Amino acid sequence: MDRQRPRWAGRQPAAERRHQGQPRHPRPVPRRPGHLHLLRGRGDQRPIFIFPWQGRYILGSTDLTYDGDLDEVVASDAEIEYLLNETNRIIPEANLTPADVLYSVAGIRPLPYTAGVSDNAKISRGHTVLDHAPAYAGLLSIIGGKLTTHRALAEDATDAALKVLGRPRGRCTTRTRPLPGADTADWRAFRAEFQRSATPFTADQRARLLDLYGVRARRVLELVVADPSLAEVVDERTGAVAAEIVLAFREERAVTLADVLLRRTLIGLGPDMALSAAVTCADVAVRHLGWDDRRARAEVAAYHAELRRFRPRALNLSAATPNSDRRTS
Image (cartoon, rainbow, N blue to C red):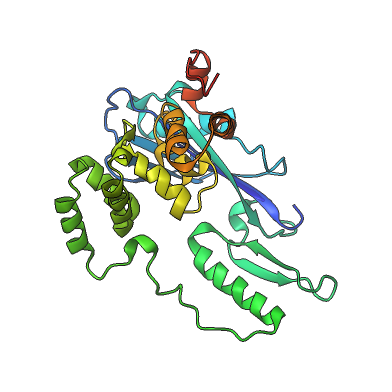
């Protein structure tokens, strides 16, 4: 398998690890890039990206073979140092150090085992849907693939499953069907109307909701109109509101607090990874979704535990500062 790590990002399958890191930006950096920069590592010629994101920078990625515990994929000190050194080589004035990294992201992607190949870059990123019949009738495995081809991969896997089940292949609609947030005939008109009519929100909040939810920003507004208390701001940095927490659980299949913060509202991708907002968001679930205090405490604790694999700087700082809130005690 292949471990991929960006900031902030063998046998079959082989594994590749990729890593990215997100430096903070507490001070001006001379010649800091305003647009995406692509460079190559001095020794290995690996592509490295530097691009601005919400006032900070994403650096990445590394690309290493990984055969460890899939539940313990964490960016190593060496990987972080590699990205910082290469960035400093191109922009010496940046003078980045590990203390400038807010958090890191590491992930695994499966690569097909290829005999005699040690360079992950030479292994195909294509995917295969393998039918294990007759040894294991009805078992299909997906090998390889990558995020940018996930839709095509899903289509191939569905076709393979229909074949095994003896059912006719239907016409695939995902190739042309809009994603939920893009389901409008005139995006510019929708955007203008939302900015004009969503009066419970500030201009910055309206812009964020449109960028994050697309036309589904209307659902956030509808929840706030039905219950004005859901306009409560749960994260001061982003301006995210309580209605987003409710929407994530009720309509976006979120199961945990971590789902909401990291994979729905994206509050958790900020500088402190939503450590300052987690308790507030859990409290919204207590008041509006029927959670009791025990579940709220458990969800906050589980969120903190999940964050450890990101090595967030803020988690180390908060661990040194006692929190008096009853849900985190």
